Amino acid sequence: MACSIKKVFTKEELKKHDGSNGSAYVAFGGKVYDVSQSFHWRKGIHQVMHHAGCDLTEALGRAPHGSDMLDKFPVVGELMDSD
Image 1 (tube, rainbow, N blue to C red):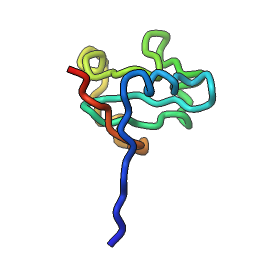
Image 2: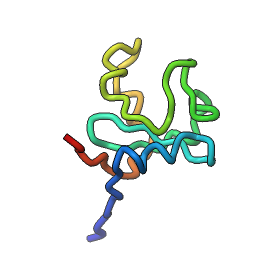
Image 3: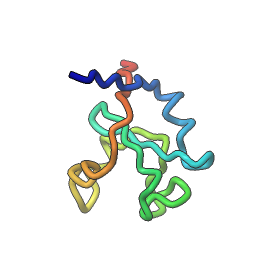
């Protein structure tokens, strides 16, 4: 049985994956998703209002689609709870 170890990201580490260096990651519900290959996340920006490198948990509550849209992207880690 293979064991998959995921990276644990701090909010500061997540910010480094804002799309400017080629990798675009977003967090939702404690999981970190790699959206780098998505046409909708070109240059780390989605619909002019959402930016890669951020926790989108609250923002997705106001989005016209559900969080299930993230299911098609690989989970690359977990976001450390800083509270």
